Image 1 (tube, rainbow over the protein chains, first blue to last red):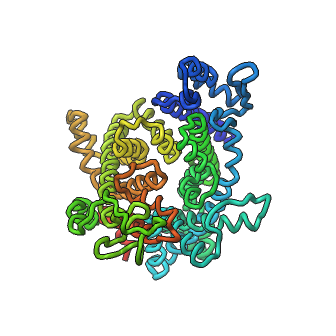
Image 2: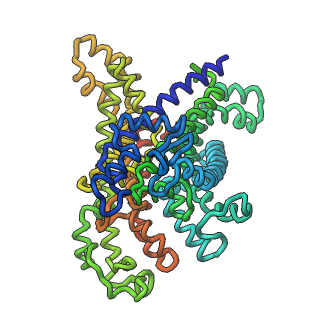
Image 3: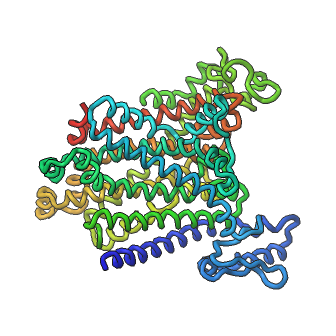
Length: 330
Length: 275
């Protein structure tokens, strides 16, 4: 019952947030002076053809109606134009790219495996490395291990991921010739090639983020280890391993999970930088291309989709939170 | 860090000493393929850090002037977002009510925004008449004030129940007086620490955007864009990556260390932990 209330409450607030974000995004992009119809009209562009193109794309209507049509398209799909030239965009329709003659949903789905491969692999790695380092640092506080780990993490926090990525390519790709320097191979075609292409991006992203997580975990762990219930657990004669692993870690993980959800969500929405460095055709690359071509429907679609992922991740975090920390339940 | 501030301020002077400026092309320093001639990307007495591939612009001048771009955008965005965050957080925490609920909700929405994606998209669509650095400062500030507002609001909530605040309200002090004279001085440490931590992340964000080609437009020197350009030259001219990259890394590291130091100095809790 408690869980049900938690889930439904969070679900409502998630949908509300999504609607607000989509409205703002839509308003900002549609109100700015850029005209997809003008771009697709070609030359010479007569006023009649321009008006036709606008009507075809649905840009002849006030933006509130455009927005409602867009929302409707997500639920029921929509058809642009009429007669023989009409294009149908099946539900869930996040818009239609008139430049690529493809529905945005289709374009996004095509790119998802790449971005998800990068993001999930890196996230698993950085969570293990980061939390592990943080816990060890906290338990061995003040020792050489702690100092080394914290120095390393200060460096990691300050290093931009693209810089580390490029240096990694230079060292492991060109000089040592150990891993491929760019590109992506689908998992279904060649699992070994898939893994081989992803090792370097995973390690680079994981190292940078692990630095952040190690600091966070260490700080939390030090706070928690000072609590009374830890003293109680020790006084009961529990082994140190159990005290740290069971009693302390559970409380340490609460803030870590929060940050993790947001990080993973935004990475899933487009590992823009990693995709650019390693030339991988993921969601971020799709967005950069769309930006380069001023493909407005595609830009709006990708932005909203990644907002959706972040909010979904937050929603899941809230649920995990509710399980980890019973006090957080409404 | 002081080193970078000095370098940024004295950029024209420094490049004048080196006898170079970041806009002049020197095609003589390049081989036919566009790659710099000579050792380490064309390092010579004339070009201390070598030259930029394809254009032959002096890399030392680019790096020094790039410090200006980075620090101006970074400090500008930080100043705007700290100001906004403190004002909003302070008033929301103090007055409460529906205003506070609206603020909290707005903060949640903004923190849930895919801000990198949004900024990239916005950068491409925004009218070109708007100066890019100004747009960057604005957009970075819009997405970063919520985090500081949230912290300030939390602390204000705790402070306003303390006796000295309650007492001055009971004595008839106006809202302005309580906010500025009673609450703000107690928040100074938090605000200073947050600002120093925010500057490197802003510098990083600006560099990331320039790296992706949606930040400061050429020919204005920017570290991020040089690093982005270096992608194509990693194999033939690694020094083109190393100098701007090293500068960006060292600047971020310097500000981060300063932030850590300040936090430890202000927070007695962490002081004991660092022996």
